[in-house]
Length: 215
Image (cartoon, rainbow, N blue to C red; front, side, top):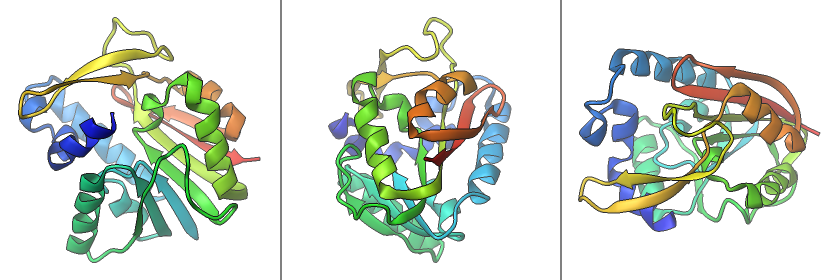
């Protein structure tokens, strides 16, 4: 999956923008409306020092950086390059670190809040404790974490169940990526080990999210 996301960096935003391979997907108007709803929620979240895990191209960093001092983590160098280019275009700043989301190389309890966009659905249950424990160690007690992710859009796959999703890049290469669709209920149960789930929501058809207070 590391190689896949490094290869996908230059075309990743096509998913948000409904371009390229995604241009012909149905419900485009509703998709853009729900992306806008997510953008509003993210723009209202965060303060102090904020850790963004699997930041990708910085699509969400752009909306976090005006409110907080952001440190972004991603393993793909191409993603981090896209992120920094985006921030420069908008006159924003965030520290970027290339690191494994399961082994964050940062000082303990130094962040006031955390954020992960469209990453949790790629975390296998066998490594969930490892991931959540790492996030917990990074945040101060009482800090909050926002998670946003994909709601189920493939009826043949049940929410909360791991499977491998085939993805095709613009060059025609095929990749198998672990995926877990979520609902507010599966997010709540998945994130419970991290702390108190303050709220879990869905935007309608495409996205879900939750805010957790670390305990």
